[in-house]
Length: 126
Length: 125
Image (cartoon, rainbow over all chains, first blue to last red; front, side, top):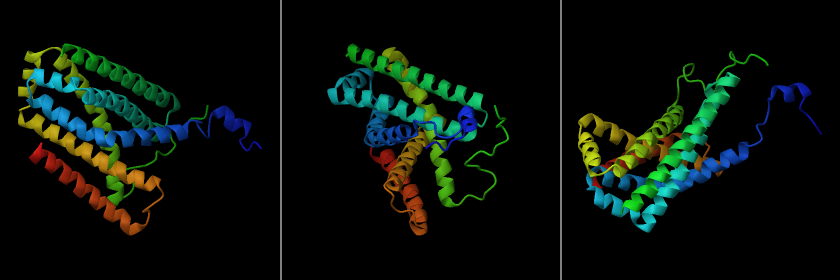
C-alpha cells in the first residue's frame, strides 16, 4: 500500500532511507570510543611531555598501533555522523544543507586518511 | 521546489528557558562540534611527530602557555562530558530511565562524573 502522494515523492519529503544505519553506526562508534577516549588522553599526555623516541616506540607497540587506527576510523566516522545531524537540524535551505553535509564528509575522509598515513609513517620511523 | 527557508528549526534554542536537561543536551552538541574541530589538532600533532624532534619540542614548549593549557583541559573536560552524556543516551536507547526524577538526577551525575574524571586525569596522569 502506498500512502505517500506523488507530490511528496517529487519533493523528496519523508524518509531518507538510511536513517537506521546512520543511527546504529553512531551508537557502535560511540561504544568503541568510550575506552579509546581514555587511551587517547594517555597518548596526548605522552606526546606533550615525552621525548620523540619514546612516543614513536610507544605508538609502535602492537596494541597502541591497533588502538590509534581503530580510534581514527571510529572518531572521524562518529564526528561526521554527528555533524550531519546538527547540519540537518539547523540548516533549512535544501541546497546549502546538502553541500554542507558533503563538505563535512569529504573533509573528515581527508583528515582520517591523513591521520592513518601519519600513523604508518611514524611507526616506520621506529 | 517549495521554498523551505522560513520553516522553524528544531531544536530551537532562544525561545524557551531551557531546563537543566535541555542545557546538558545542547552542551552535548556543542562539545561534539568542539571535539570534532579538535581532531584537526590531533592530525597536526601526528605530523609534528613525523617532522622530527625539533618541531615536537617547539610544540611541547608552546603548549606550556597557560592559555593553551586551559584550552587543553577544556578539551579534556569536553571529552569526558560528551562521553558521560553519550552513555546517558545509550541508556535511553535501551528504553530506560525516561521518568522525570531520574532525568534531573542523571544530569547532575553526568556533570559530577565528568568533573571527577577530569580532576583525576589532572592529578594522576
